[in-house]
Structure formats: C-alpha cells, structure tokens
Image 1 (cartoon, helix red, strand yellow):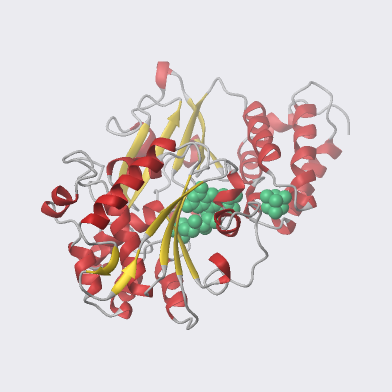
Image 2 (spheres, protein in one colour; image 1 turned 180 degrees about the vertical axis):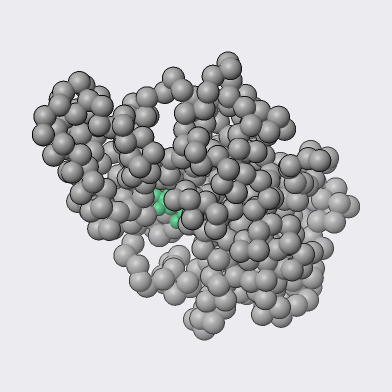
Length: 421
Ligand SMILES: Cc1cc2nc3c(=O)[nH]c(=O)nc-3n(C[C@H](O)[C@H](O)[C@H](O)COP(=O)(O)O)c2cc1C
Ligand code: SF4
C-alpha cells in the first residue's frame, strides 16, 4: 500500500491550474460557497477541530490564531499569505502556487469572508517571478468568475487579493518583517507584543498564514474538521508536504499523512526518498530548513509528526528534509549553515549579529587539528544559549538550532581536533 497521500495535492496534475471552470468541475469553490453561507464561528470551529498547525515553520495552531482575530473588534482587518519561502531546502509552496493556485486563492478568500476583511495580500518570494505572474492571472480569472471583487456571490461583500514581490531577504519571511516589507518599509522584525492579530498590516488587525496552511482551508471546510483530523495525527490533522533534497535517490515534494510514517520511510521508501544515492550510507538529515535541527541514523525510527519529532529533539519546521551521506563533514556542513545566517542576519540585535560570526570563528578553529581549545567548546555552548534566549526575532533564536542538535549527535567530531585544555 502506498505510504503517500493525495489530499492537498489532489488535482495538481489533472487540469489547467488557471481554469476556474475546470477547478469548479472538480469541486473547487464549493468550500467558499459553504463558507459564505456560514457564520464565521462555524468555519473557525472546523479549523480548530482539524488541528491544523501552521505549515510555515512555527506550527502555531491555525484555529486559535483565527479565533483570536475574530474576537478583535477593530476594523478593517487584513489577510496576508506568507509565500516568501526563504527557508533553504524548502520548495513546497512553489508547487502549490504553480499547480494549485486556485486552491490557495480559495483558502485566502474563505479567510476574507470569515473576517470580513478589507483585502488580502500574497507576499511572494522575489525569485519566484514566474509564479507572481501566474498568481496575477489566477486572480484575474477568479475575479472574472465572480469569486473576487465587488459583491462576491451576491453577498454584498467586496474583497480583492494583491500580489507583493518579496524583498529578497530571508528575514522578510518572519511575519512582522514581512508586514513592514509589504508596507514598503525596511524588512526588519517588529517588537511583539502587540500581536499581529491586534496591530498588523498598516497597524490594523491581521491574519498571517503560510501558503500550505491556506491551501488546506478549502479541504477542511469541505470534509469537516473531524474527517481532516483523522487523515493525520491526533495532535495535528491532515498531511504535510515534505521537500526531499541532498543525497537521497529521489528529490522533490511528497505529500505524506502526519503521524503515519517514520523518518526512515521518508528517506528510504522507494516511492519517497528511495534511499541514499551511489550506495553510500546516511550520515545525518537536516529537518525544517537551516533553522531546524539535525538528526542522526539513531533517530530514523521517529514518527514524522509534530509531537513525535519534538519529543526526539527534532522538528517538522517548513517540511524540508536535507539528506547528507557519509562523505559529509558535520563541521563543514555547519560552517555553511552559519555563513547563511551571517549573511541573512538583519543586524538589529547583538546576539544574532555577533553570535553567528563568533560561532563561525570557533567552527573554523575546530576544523584544524589542535587549533581549538576545550574553552572554545564552552564558548560555543554559551553562544548557543545566549542567541537562543536573547535574540530579538526567530531568526537569531533558531540560528544555532542545527549546531545545538548536531553537537549532541556528533560530539566526537567536535572534540576530535581539540588540542589544548
Ligand atoms: C527568519 C524567519 C523566516 C521565516 N520565513 C518564513 C517563510 O518563508 N514562509 C512562511 O510561511 N513562514 C516563515 N516564517 C514563519 C512566519 O513568521 C510565520 O510564523 C508564518 O508565516 C505563520 O503562518 P503559519 O502559522 O500558517 O505557519 C519565518 C520565520 C522566521 C523567524
Ligand atoms: S535576531 Fe536580531 S539581528 Fe537577527 S534577524 Fe532577528 S532582529 Fe535581526
């Protein structure tokens, strides 16, 4: 029996992705019609029952986020879709925007109805130029069919969706930096609280969700929260798009049910990762992007669910799984990760701006026989702690996650070159 599931990506290959009539023939926009005729509380109740955890990386429960925004009285409200997809090794939102743009738009329009929002915005990664054009065409087609624009479905509700080009910085994927960037300001994170549900885009109440999160909304509305939950794990319903890259045989996006497969299945199943290329052995895998943790062969039997991975010190994050074979030095790999964060740190706060640079200095010393001391290892541990606890935003708070997890799994490699006390 197949280990894969065809829930979210259903329809990805069967019709013209930009044709509203073909999408409707396949059941598209039925969820929107249902949502337009329902009370906002009813829709949110289904999202809560579904236990949809945000697919952008932080895994925040979508139902709670939606409920919080609903209880805020101030208007106008805005809907923002995070399509920045800046996390290295992550390319699943690209698939949704390319193959299922109408499903994504349907999810964003449903959110518009629930909150009687003034407008929706999709903040698309700057490098995804073709997808920005594709989304604009999809929006035009949906507007022409009467699902966007004035008086949608005769309900008197006016709503439109705008596409924003991302500013090309990883930090712009952080939700408050993304809102600053959308407003035309420098894409740096804001202080929180206030929560974005209270003070968001143009300082108004705002919902920010990831592409994959929004694309799941029509499914939840159509099948109901309970049925959606059953497709996945009791703590987090539905499926997850995983992105396999690196040294596995098969690379690409795969849809798997949450809680029903192990990491071993994801990497070795012939239908999914297909094992390690060139008959080499697995050394480690990096989950959830550069900001996620690194796991070793000993953790392969961990079930792929938010709960099980967290218990094992790992995380789903964005869904990225970067597979590395035995030829890769963990220290060299971590140097690459740290260089990425040095490049992407916005420089606003000291722990992240300086911490990443100091980590790189120590990793460089550790790569040379006898150059590092045991004091350097202590400093490394202090840097990890300080950056995690004291950085201003999620970028700095997670920049040392890979190092912290790799340190636990590959201690011997860290200590091998330490010369003096
Ligand atoms: C440095 C940084 C980069 C991020 N990049 C992205 C991104 O590219 N896409 C995304 O959806 N979320 C990204 N996030 C998470 C967002 O801040 C936010 O949690 C997410 O958009 C909320 O949507 P969700 O609840 O549907 O996941 C990033 C967070 C940080 C700290
Ligand atoms: S942690 Fe600090 S320096 Fe790093 S990206 Fe966030 S605000 Fe900028």
